[in-house]
Image 1 (cartoon, one colour):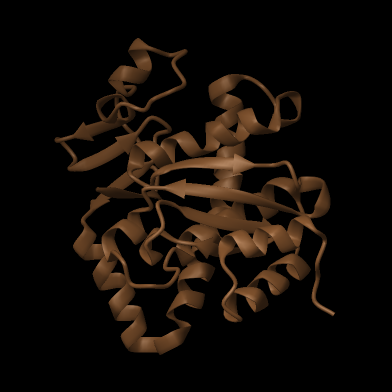
Image 2: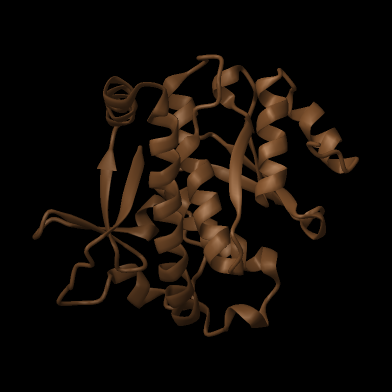
Length: 234
């Protein structure tokens, strides 16, 4: 199950039951806690008062196959751009609900704490768990691991990276959050037989280098080593 959020906000006559009962709870990893299934309107509203839509794996397969039929090899680019637009808009939405939820400004808290607050709704919605490595942030790049990617899990072992929408989502969100132009590439994917998906997020020159090395057959481990050693394209 995956949810697609940020549809038009639904106004309800009464406050969401669990939010009213537990106004200070922030970790809504329970499916029942996070969603309000409004049978009277046929809507699914989450904790942040956004409308959600439940979709199946068939939807994901149909979306990707439909894009491939229409635009061929450019399907990955289209999915990336969809994700990037989504991430940009979600960053704006997140900054509003974060202040309302936690009563803190983003500048007042640890960056990792903020990132975890952003991602937990995605975990609840079925997009998978994640892990962020900020150790190389000062060098212009960082790594993000996604466990149980909805896209890769659905497509199975196809021998290539498939989580373009995740890469776009990360690029759009982080660019908007830190107010710097960042891009992202998936360098390891569950759909390649790996146990999890790994993304490189950073400045364009880092992404260009990683893309070149990946096209030359470099593994995620090779790409990581080269970046850590400061290698760049000449």
